[in-house]
Image 1 (spheres, rainbow, N blue to C red):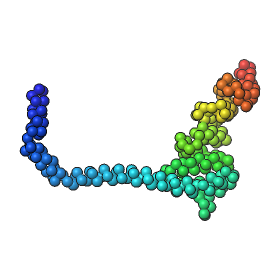
Image 2: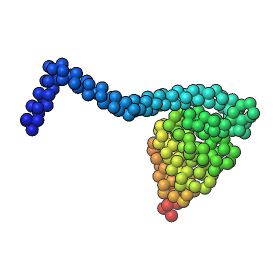
Image 3: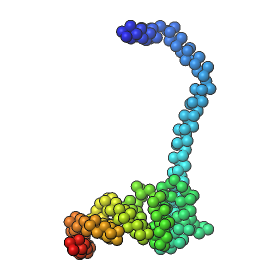
Image 4: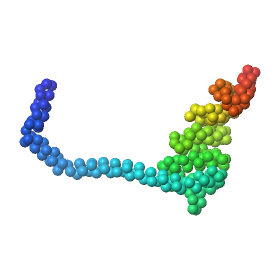
Length: 235
């Protein structure tokens, strides 16, 4: 092993001290490039294409998102003014949320449009469509994920899937937990569990509300339901 190390060390010194050895090494590299020029330059070209493609796609997506934001302005205005059909479908002149989703797939604006579409379908009592769009919405940007989970919970509630609804309401309460919205979501979760027949879980949630949110605006309702369910359990 020591001999090998010494041999490599000697080779290194030869390259440093002997100009002819350096020239020979450079000539070998040039010969390799000559003999394999297609392979080498092909690999470089592929690398540039990949890097250029990534940069180009990022620019394209940013440009598409900016266009989508512009086009979505009118749909948002309709939504805020309760013109839900127009907001969803648009007109021959202005895009609706469904157009934004189709035309600008993969952008943040298209993702936000899914949230709006889901909320509209929920209000229109088209619960299957509401679930479809709200579940496809990536709720880690732009809007509170707690709110989107609560809307999804409401859609499942209307479909009669109370266990699923209760779970979503609990998730909403735990997401960005606060004393304003979290107890509201927990009240909905407790109701859903009771409708699902899980009265012990419902009573437990009412108890949590009473303990954790003593200044909650509906604290008296939470106490009343807690006492009612505990009385039922003791009979």
